[in-house]
Every structure is written in C-alpha cells, then in structure tokens.
Amino acid sequence: MPNTLGKPNLEIFADTLLTEAKKNSKIIVVTSDSRGSGKLVPFGKELPQQIVEVGIAEQNLVGISAGLSASGKKVFAVSPASFLTARSLEQIKADIAYSDQPVCLVGISAGISYGQLGSTHHSIHDFAVMRCINNMTIVAPADNFETSEVIKQAVNYNHPLYIRYGKKPMLDIHSNKTQFQIGKAIIIEEGEDVALIATGETVQRAFLASQILKENNINSTIVSMHTIKPFDSETFLNIAKKSKVIVSIEEHSEFGGLGEQCASLLAQNQINTNFKIIGIPDEYMVNGSQSDVLDHYNMSPEKIAKITKSLID
Amino acid sequence: MTDINLKKKSLEYRKTILEIIFRSGAGHTGGSLSCVDILNVLYNSVMDISPENFSKIDRDHYIQSKGHSVEALYTVLCDCGFYQREDLDTLNEFNSHFIGHPTKKIPGIEHNTGALGHGLSVAVGLALGLKKDKKKHRVFTLLGDGELSEGSVWEAATSASKYNLDNLIVIIDRNKLQITGGTEEVNPIEPLSDKFESFGFNVQEVDGNSIESLLNTFENIPFQEDMPNMIIANTIKGAGISFIENQVSWHHKVPTQEEFNLAIQELEENLKNA
Image 1: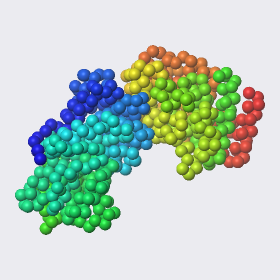
Image 2: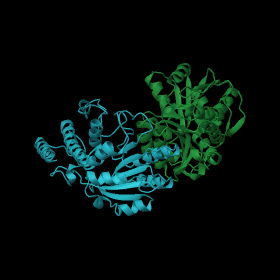
Image 3: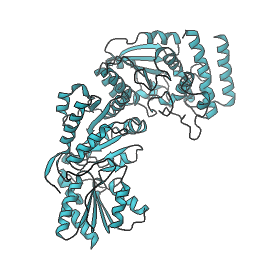
Image 4: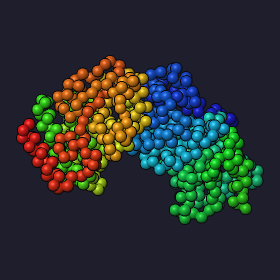
C-alpha cells in the first residue's frame, strides 16, 4: 500500500475540474469571492467564460447555480463548506435538492481546515444538515485519487451532490488498482481484529493508527467511507458482523455524521459490538491548528490506536 | 389575443381560482387575484411557452418566486393546455402533486418555489445561462412585494446588473399588503423604483390589473439594452371581487359558501357586461 505524501485535495479538485472543463464547455464554476481559496485562479484565467462570480453572497451563489443548471449547464458551486452549508442551506434544500438540479456543491476547507480562524469558519455540521435533506448525495474524498475520481464522476452525476474536503496535503492511501464509485465504500485493508471506519481526511489518520495497532499485533480493517449518503450499508454491515470492535472517525460533530449512521445500522441490525464514535464533542471548541485540534479530539493516530485497543481489552 | 378576450379570460380565471380554493379548502386568495392579470398577459400574449415546447430550453422561461400565489398559476397553465381541469381539481388532496406551492411535478412549472426570496437568483442564473449560449429567449420572474424584505433578493439584483441581463424581466406584484398588514408598516420597501434603479435595473411602473397597460409595457421589452428589466406592477390584493379587495384578512382566507356564491355572481355579471 503506497503512503507517500500527495498534494492538497483542493489542488487536485481545481486541476481536475480545469481539465474536465476544457473538454466540456457546459461546465460552469460559480464562486463567492472564493476562487483564490478554491485554487481556481488558473481556471478563471484560462476559461473566463466558464466562471461566474457572485461576490460574498452564498445564498445567491446557490440560487444562481440552480438557474444555470436549469439552462443546461453543469454547475460546480464552490465556497467554504462552513458558509455553503449554513448560510445557503435553504437554497440548497429548495433550489437544488427539492428542485432536483444536478448541481455539484463543493465545500472547500471543510471540517476544521481553517484552524485558528475559529468556529465561524469550521464546518462540523455539514454532514448532519446535508444528510437530512432528501435527494442529496454527500461525498468526502480521502486522498488525491478519491478527489480526482469524484470530480470526474460529478460531471456526469445527474442529481444534487455535495463534496467536501480540506486543504492540507494528503497521504496517497490507495493502490493503483483501487476502483472509486460514489456510494461504494473502499476497503483499504482487511484485518480480523478491529474495524476502523473513517471518512474524508481522517482516513489517513485511521491508516496511521492501524500501523500502530499492527505493532501491537492487532490487525485492522480500514474503510474509506467516502460517501456519507447514500451510505454503503451493505459493506458496513458485512464488516460489522465480523468485527468485535468498530471505531468510526470523522472530522465532524459527533452528532449526525458518520458515527451516528454506523450506530443506527448496528442497532437496527441487532449487531452487538464494541463501538466508539470519534468526532468533535458538543462543547466550545479548543483553538489551534487543524492538526492540533484533531489531535486534541482523539483523532491523532496514537489516540485512535489507544481507544481502539481499549475496546479490545 | 385581443384585449377583450384577455379581459374575459381574467374573469374566468378568477372564477377558477375561487372554485379551486373553495373546493380544496385552502389557498392564497388575495395574492392569486392580484397577480392573475399579469399571468394572463404573460402566458397568452407575451411568453413563448406552450405544452409543445416546454421540454426544450429554446423557449421563454417563467419562475414564480411568490410561490404561494400558485392557484393563479395553476389556473392559467390549465387553460393553456398543460393539464386537464380534473387534474387541477385534485388540489390539496392526499397524494396530489397540486399542492400549495409550485413544483416541477406539475407540467408547465420549471422550478420549485415557496420559500421566499429564492426566485430572483434562480432566474438570474437561468438568464445568464441563456445569454452565455447566445439564446434569444427570456426569463420572467414574479416576486411579491412582501418578499422584498428577503436579503437574498438584493444579492440577486446585484448579479442581474453585473451580467447585463436584459433578457431578465422581473415583475413585482406590488399589492402593498402582506400577511401581517401593509408592506410599509411591516417593513417599508419604498422608494422601490429608486432602489431597483440604483441596483442597475431599468424600472417601469404599470397598472398590474390592467390588460392594456400590461400589454403596452411588455411590448417594450427590453426597455434598454444590457440592463435587466423591472416592472413594478401596481395591483390590488384580491382584485376583481369587491369584498375581497384590499383586505389583509384575505391573504389566505377561504371563502364561505355564501362568500363564494357572491363572488361568482359578481364575476358572472362582469362577464355578461364584458
């Protein structure tokens, strides 16, 4: 399994979208003063007719995206995840999801990517709010490969789609043979002792935790649950039935995200296993860099490994 | 279509609006009656939209931002042949797609609305997409006046102007009432014309319940090259039924049997004299 350091998913998104948009003039990017943050300056320079700028107005960003989509364009609406999924939530619900406009909503700098900028800029609510909007697909790609694949698939995805990722370089966790499909979880490694279910950029932390566990003779199944909705229940339940210990890890509130989805499936399928959700607890959050905050909230590889091990013992 | 035929249609439409609201036991009576003349003129004389071309992009487009006045829209679309009256008569029944706000499940409706302040952004996006593809067709959108307190309307207005959308025609149903009371008491929006002019619109005011005035105004679209068009349609909430006109209480009041009979009688007399 390769684990070299790749690029930020943000860059992969921008590069992939530019490549796709050069081939397909129907692709339009809509930004809310976010082209710099979204690494879309080259896109704007190379394809000025395919970028629409609405200024700092996220509600308008989403409404205009719905209208452009209705005119036959394939729209990527790009804005920080925190604002996109909170400020314009009603537009997402009514104009995109309910109206079934196949707009791709791209939440950049998701989770706690903005670190010290504070909770106004964090999106630890987005899985929860987007999950309970009908007709919304949610994807959090783990690494450069998943990001590139999801963007390519998004071009031909005919329903509303929300993609969120961060801006730090990511480990390449997949081999060349991996297949990516929206809605289908990727089993990175299979091990008989514990299962680590992670999504987005916490997958690499789960992967690093599994290496620590391996040093302690504990073999992990590692899953990249990139698609939060529709959830790949089948893969999850197959793994859950074989696992005595399951830990979910997400850069999101403990409420309403990956962990609670897993808990719901475990409970409703009478699977009695040692299960733990690792996410951001309901408190006034500590301040720090993304990495420091994630480490603080039990998402360092060491703490994930320790918590997992404690569930076995 | 001649003015007199359009005037008769407006009276017939008012009858239908009252019938479906009375029958289903719910609806936005006042607002539907204030905007029905606008819809009449748009669908029968101005816009290139029909059941035959509806599935194509190459036609005019209409988004009703004030979605709650859906009974007027349902009535006009029915008359234009998008569906049968028996379909419309399922309004508000269990499992009917004819509900209290427009959805794309209804033939002839192209965007789901209901939450206020959304339609203008969507119309701007649609008009921008058509303009980028150098298509000549236009996008019409109808907003309520109470709706103008929504900040998103003004976000959208800035983009309409930035992108020189002369293919966008925004109509305000300026009936001066909203659910709580007068718009100027609830949250003043005047001077409306000046506001939209300063946002880069070419603004025209019109008697929104006068077929002649509406026809004359729509004839001059685009008012000015490269500028979005704004029509402030001064209307009367509840227009056409004497005892419903200008009454806050008729925002979404359903007529009693007696009120219904009186209203239909008044409309039929007006039809006889038309």
